[in-house]
Length: 344
Image (cartoon, rainbow, N blue to C red; front, side):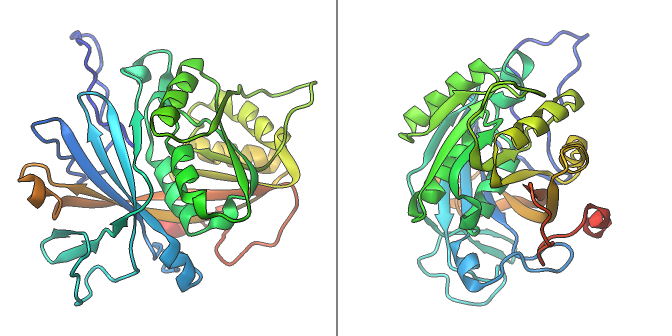
């Protein structure tokens, strides 16, 4: 997610301050104890009016997420939640349900499922050698919550590229516990400092995942391990990384495998990566939109009251690109890149 934690170092007059990555109107509430809380859920309806879920089973399987962020220690706690599908404004009996409210808007956040995940970011890592992988980003949350209602995305041997401190992979591990098809998940990153932090986070949350160092490369003469599924969420930030990332994706993919890429719809390098895979690597690319609501929960009231209200709601828009070696027919959920103006 967007990192809103102010750096703890002293800043000279000559240094340029780093802006907080918030959406317009996003009220980021920080309590006196340095704690802020956020609730995330995938929107059922897209901006174009299409339903994200093809059936009721998909909708019922979709999970939501509550995040508690301690800015003083750069620690985050993530709790997956599950609810029955209800309309936020419906007049019905909410007895026994966990709710957040704002004026007349009622949101059923559901019941806690699975063990919570404890995660620590790298102190000031974004300013030093650890880079962007030192903090968590909302694309990992969108990827995980979307996958909860689309379990077929997670099949066979899975490699996540650019895993960072491990949020996406750890959430996917929790979500896939009920997957009867049998999957194996490997997290990877090219930065050893980030890899160490990822392993520590997995250990402290008692999540047994394989984490390995993997650098992206534009060529290789040695045989490499290949996977049924490759995942990447918002891991391309520089244009010079696009070609080696695309080559790594293709070279690590089995002949009948799939690549799933998630990222903010307006990220320029995401579109560069898609162009690279489609045009230079000659791969098939299908895309669709995912919208995720972000609720900032109040922190300036009593502990009990703060669990029942939120101060802002914003919708972030992501793209999900499905990449394969073969040329497949576009599914009803997908659309061509030329139709991107439909989501404006």
